[in-house]
Length: 360
Length: 266
Image 1 (cartoon, rainbow over the protein chains, first blue to last red):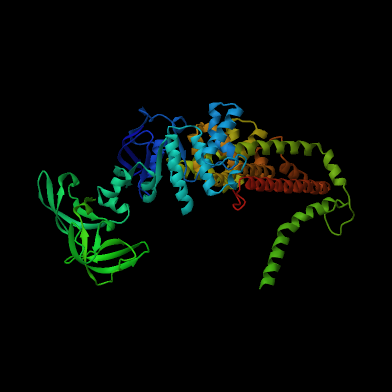
Image 2 (tube, helix red, strand yellow):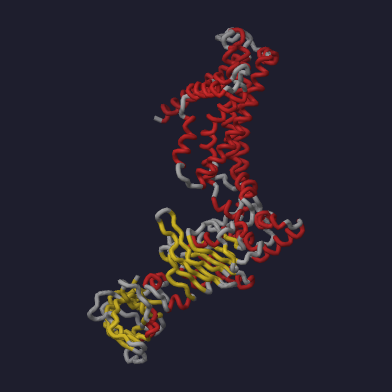
């Protein structure tokens, strides 16, 4: 559907997009995720045609978009500020793009009503744009883009201006809308939770470069690099060293946890000069009760910090001979006793809890 | 302290507006001598105005010049403001600087150099040459107003219009222009007012067709004409107060329509 081929974009000396390769499939909910300044909005605006890459090509439906201006592209965009035209009412806003299609009045009216129904705004046709709330403006912006039946809908941080409750409602509503319409959605967001809950696939961007493109689950469980791992939730990053490597697997020494054998296909390819490290999610380690021997591996540790958060308790622990605290989270149950600082406990973990990362 | 401040404000406002109020006072005074005590109430000086053929042609000239130069200056300023707010290009800063210079240049210098240039170019002096001169000095003021209009206009409004399939030209007509209309009206009014009471350049470039200020200056040499000049001044005063009120009404109505009540000066 959308093919981005080796896109490079400079603003003066600043390299805004670097070596961007990305294929977005038809009907996919695709997210561009990254901190501010990572180039995600620039990339979205490149797809829309508002920015021109210095080299590389954007193809939509197999056609190069290099010479196609924004008004001729099969894409429509929902802007971060919504860009609702303040001198028009809701119906005029929604019908704005229809003018070039030369429909008659009854068809236009019917289409506007149908589209407003899709975003749950029937009856608001004559409202002035400034008399609408933030959430309603968002829906107007959606309707205005969707009425043109684009092949691709581009959304630039559409939910960042809404309060938390409304944002969660709109997340599921956007997801439902996308499934019903079957249109390709490309969403820009800096909110990792938003990207995880809504998307089929996510491209994580840092400093103008795509670090990893994968499904939300893979990104969370098998991040390729340390920045990606740390961007999603919390991740303990431990020093790691390959001791011996065969074609089948490698023996890796992980700080505090000892030697682990890891299958060869799970060892990331590392750029020259970069180090290797190991990541362990706090929820993939447990503090074992006395007599519990179910864990694959056990390591003794001392609790240095306890943070009670209702549903979960977070413990900072230290393995013997290490300096770096490691975080372990435990679900609170009616019978489980909260441990105290200074307690010596046995930590249970498995080989699958550990993921090797490129430390970039 | 606050009573001292209050007195200061009172004196300040009196100093600012009292001279202006003398105009209508003597315009209705039944005497050719401008002095107190007032001698009696009359409308006759306004009647005298009607019969002045020279005045009528001066008013017509001034109206044509002010209308033409305000439209020209606003159009040029719209292009320059849009370019300077929306785009970056090499030499932008010096270019904008040079456009703004006539705002600070003494008018007599502009007048003399324009006259020299027109004479060298062999162009006869007429109301067209005054329009040129007035457009030149109005453009910086119009840019100052319109730049702020463009700065307040969210660029994604225009992008949204392009994105929805409209061309740049229709985007300007359907989105940009309606949203900067308050600025455009202010710009037209400012340019109109500047042109209407500009004297130096009009004096240098007018040839045989004087503008209103040039005409008034020429009449001041005759003491008998002074009361009717006072009457003319009164008419101009009323007209400018009406124009200013009108522009404020339009601005407020527009702000309300766009839901911008809390953002004055847009």
